[in-house]
Image 1 (cartoon, rainbow over the protein chains, first blue to last red):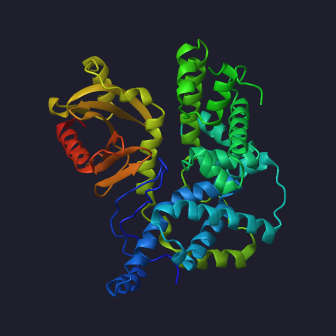
Image 2 (image 1 turned 60 degrees about the vertical axis):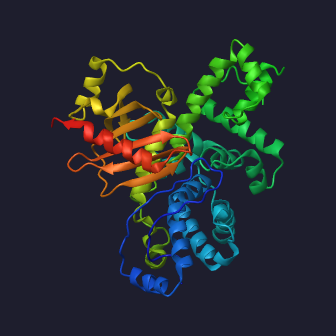
Amino acid sequence: MTPDGIWIQALAPARGSRRNALISRPWHHEPEADLYMKDDVGGNAGKARFQALCQALRPDLLRFAFWLSRDRALAEDVVQETLLRAWKARDSLKNESAAKPWFLTIIRREYARSFERKRLATVDVDELIAREEPMLAAAHDQDLAELRAALFKLPEEYREPLVLQVLMGYSTAEIAAELDLSTGAVLTRLFRARNQLRALCGEDTSMDPAP
Amino acid sequence: MIDCAEYRRTVLADPRAASPELAEHLAHCQDCPAYSDRLLRFEARLERALRIDVHVPRARAARGGWLAMAAAVLIALLVGTLWLGAPHASLAADVVAHMAGEPEAWASTNVPVPADGLAPVLAEAHMRLGPDAGMVSYAQSCLFRGHHVPHLVVQTARGPITVMVLVHNKVTEAQRFDEGGYRGVILPVPGHGSLAVLAKGEGEDPAEIESLAARVKAAIVWTG
């Protein structure tokens, strides 16, 4: 069984993140859905709830995986594998409000595994940017596209905590726990991330303190 | 008191950091307020940049030949329809992301936008706004998903609410959302896309926002 099927009332976790979405949506009546609906009639509401949770979180999970990998195809693979693993281990998720960090931790592990499995070759960053141009493009906003390209150029050790902080709403302590770093190390990485990013974007960094 | 280097090092690591020491430095420093403003503007752009549209069609074929492609199709069938419905989430997320770029719009004020400033913004969406909508304190024509749309702030008894007239974005039914510290609703407007109405703060009552949204929607006079 997989976490697909019906997608009903989407419930995002109530974790501290400022950016979590809680969105009501209608039924999407898929052929496979009937099976699950019958299951639910039988009292398996937890399954539907888990599915709804996956759907609500998936856009942010994909964004996180994309910025981590800088590769949309790989990001999709990692998220799909993450959802399958999460489904198998769903009983270990005791508190729905902790779902997002739970998923993100699985994504990070899956991403690391993808390196082990595929022995990914080093690719020139300009080639990555060109390959992912449709994802980095921003309609009528060239500055935004350039900022996205600059994010691709940030080293992973700076990019990852920055994404966790800005996109996922993690606190410094939460990032430190996720990345197994001290809070001081996280703050240093975040400082360097913005310092480098602003320089890459041509921002005036003359007033920035020395790293 | 902390010095400029320490202040800037702290806010570069976390532009939303807040402490009495930071506030005290900011109040007494000549240069750091401008530095902080620039950084916050950059931060708003950064947040928008990270919030990529995950629904952009794939531009290239799957790697690894037919076997990988077949596996991908199988997985897609199994893991399935997770993408379905997500455009709704994206629309709400994009509206919220847009808010980050114009924080000044949220000021509570009793100064209305002059009629000759409001009319051109509304005319772009082929609409006028009746007096029942409330006092409009902010009106800009904003680029949203490739189109210029009216971005308004209406002052209400419970504080300012933002209204975005999304004439190019249809929704089939009302969608409540709670994201990024904003609560709101996107209402369908048959023949004219949709209307996003949101308030700042997690304590906002969704039903009240929906009621305000319905009031604004009813006050719109479509001219085209």
